[in-house]
Length: 280
Image (cartoon, rainbow, N blue to C red):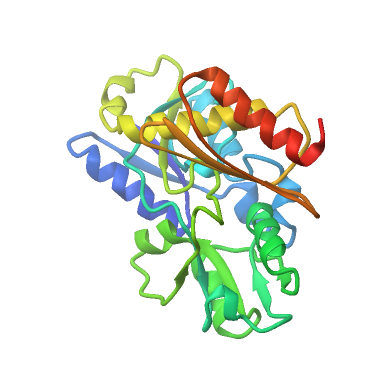
């Protein structure tokens, strides 16, 4: 089978995890530089959803590759046409972390903090409106280098990425009840074409609890899709039976913690987020 992946060190680390779980299978790895990787002089939000996965999805549908390994948080809330989410691996840590000499509450007034995430930026601005938020692009090592050479006083990254790269950096974990993670954060996804002959093999990699959690997160995102555009964090736990969510605008923030029993509860969470921020 031909496995497609981005060529970044983190993408390869995640790919190697999948390859190790598919021991005994004949696998060829094909590295792809996506538009999100190649164009680094524009804010990530300007690419829209799926900047790092659209080309991989197209190559799956065209038959150029048989499967792709993605960070689930990079994917749209719905599977691209012709593809299917074949497996979600056991979830890694979901937290965001602050790389800085000081914890967030002790950063000096006017400190420059780097992030490419509108969610992280919005939550940070709500907590510390005095801080200057500066766009941060590039792979994990590039971002770390920019921080260490003094371009930023602090940067925010995903804890899972640092751990998967075995980077021994000192960091401050941001409370996931406050900095609610992005939907799918910490999860590795394996995608293939619908009716792929490899589906039975790939499905064995699936972690049922993680899959239930991220399915709920993606469903809430899907419900929000037709509403206003707002930075949101969504984190489901306990097999999708509880959700913590946050939505942020320039002058307000909505936080939700709710049990999930069925799709009506999912719709209720999405409606509450949308109404709280957009006034719909």
